[in-house]
Amino acid sequence: YYELSSDSPVYPLGDFRSSVSAKGMAWVPRRGLDVMACETARLMKLTTSSVEPLSFTVPRKSDSFQEDLYPDTASSIPAHSADEWMAGSELPPVEMAMNPTLR
Image (tube, rainbow, N blue to C red; front, side, top):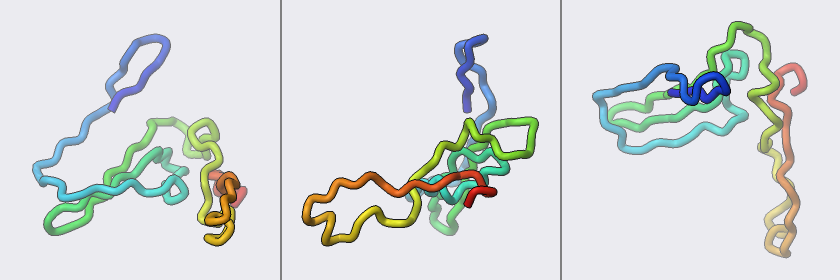
C-alpha cells in the first residue's frame, strides 16, 4: 500500500502477500466499513475452503471519527421504486452519513 503526499511522490505503507490463491473477490459497501478503525475498504477473498476479509486502513493517531476519509455515501434505502425507474426516473441515490454519531 502506498500514500501520496506533497513531501514525497510515493510513500510505502505496507504490503500483503498470500500463498492461497483466490477463486473470487467482492468489495464490501462503504456503509459496512469500520470507520472508527479508519478502514477505507474491505475485500472479501474467496478461496477453495474459506472467505477471508482483507482490510485496508489508513494509519491515524486518533481513534475518533475521521471526517476527511468518509464523505456521505449511498444508503440501502432506494431512491425510487422499480416502476418509477422503468418509467425513466433519474433520481440521485439516497445518501447516509458515515459518522456513527449521526446515524
